[in-house]
Length: 320
Image 1 (cartoon, rainbow, N blue to C red):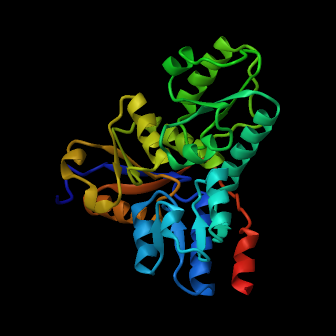
Image 2 (image 1 turned 120 degrees about the horizontal axis):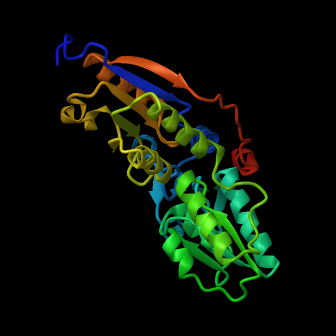
């Protein structure tokens, strides 16, 4: 498409913050440093983060991704992904003499600790989340028999617990803020004595990225492009934020997935990225849109300055 009358005044607003959160930065750094310091082979249980480009990049460097510890030879080293694992997986690693470097996001670890605390106090625990997500699978494993998964208000209404006065809730870290609020309100209606986490479980990056999309929508977006992979929960939620306001949204892995028909008649396009999507993919989409006549502008909502320390097992493994 040539620049001209059809492109004049077209804008691409790029959300900030976007892309990598502190937990993803930490997990990727763990694998990078392990590749430098440790002899091959290097195993990672599940995807280190939910992004196709990141996983394929590590696979090209020799990282072996496995779905189960059964695929890891006894005595080997394995990195646990940012999404966390259940106590049963830790026990399996010990039983098979597998050395572990734990790249679990500290905010996910916080949720695990909350579940353990509530379970120790005799509560039934309600986990708000999406069935089958790696983070949810790990969290559910912290309190077998005492934890109930819900993902909708309707599921709250059907929930049965042992003692309605001994119920607590926690949440997956990458949920829709608005939808989660409705589910929490439903929980409070059904169980007035329900205990909440000491601090919201939805992570700062998930909230900031959703707030950034809402700020773009206030600028009159007629299309939102979200860079992220299909299995990225927080990326999917960004699309849902736009769709809830009646704005078309598409989840894409990179510029090659942008369809020209999406852009026909669009004046203001928003661009953002999920918390596990690398910045070079965002730049690729921005360059594509610029080449089609869109003027690109950063739209900053809030500054982020969060950093997590590396797991101590990494230093130990490098010394051994």
